[in-house]
Image 1 (cartoon, chains in turn blue, cyan):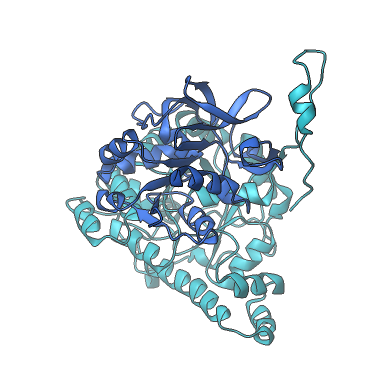
Image 2: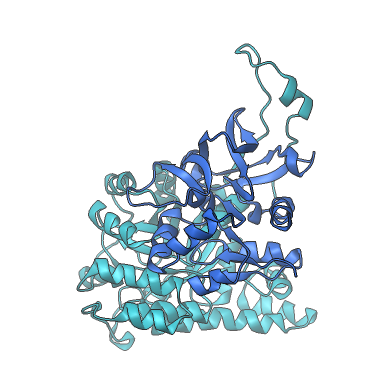
Length: 194
Length: 319
């Protein structure tokens, strides 16, 4: 049986990830409760506001069960806010902001500035092929520290990591769900299947 | 979409020596594109945007899990009570709010007042609301929103109004409702009108779309796009009259993708609790058990107003 993919559906661009998966013939499960979490084999943490999502994870009783699943090795894809939630450390976050440490990186929130500095660009991401990916950065975070186990998949400005992988966990500063390119989702699904 | 320039060639990126004398060719970065502007609206889906009048309220809103705050001098219910001309907020006050929050900060400009919008863009707010809650500055024209890097949200009472705003460059639509009343009836009317017409267009044949465009006084290509996709081309949020967690759930179930709460939070008895309850209700809008739990013991919601008793209907502003 093919693995069940969930999308953390507390807030954010949940629908865009769902339609990206739908284009790959995958019907995703919306995850808002621990019971729903139990039914999935892998989870996408979408873009949105990480501070609000972090709060809702606790209020919905999802934080601890999800932390256990992630530490047990559940594959996960985190985009933008999702990357912040999966990180080990968050800089410029709120004091009460919690994250899962599912990947050994520290990230800085809003590292490129406010909305007027949000941008789209072509980004080299060799792991998905030679053609650069069209990457949309919205009030985006950047990776400031990577642990020894972490692979940097893409950088911007020469040396600032914006896509990383550790085992079956992939994170991106940008929003693959906003462009038509499905290769990041495919890369994640390949890791889930492996 | 605008021009896409090719990225630096792989060999150049890999082989160029790291020396201060070498200028590396960087892939072009485009700011202020439609994708970037609509993208932020996409990220706000499922959340609550709260009106705040000072840094302390902004902190309460963010603590409660707001996904953005709307900085303004007076909440709509006070504007309604005080009367007079309501204008853009003092930049100092907006900056004070920006300084204490990590979430996006929005601010309002008067309808047609592009100079206020230019000031808000210069202040670096994350979204500009061209809002009927303020006194209109132009009785015929809305702002040409394509001219800005900062994205705009606009109100609408029906689909034609929504599509005219989108054709002027708005990247997010909010149904207007009737701000400052604590009465959700107008929000429901506007939401049903917009979403009902979208559903009808979805079943229209290609010849009927011309008549739809004429009736709505909206650009034909946008009407055709709705017929093709079955949705508005930009995210659609709800505003104007939401005062309880149940109100938030109602409009989300009707099809709103996020909610704006104005006077409903800081005019209630316990703003901090009400704010958190509306955040939880919006995220779990389909789960009556959660709604029952968060609706308990919130104290008084803001005092409400009958629509028939209003001297001014703010929703009538805008053309």
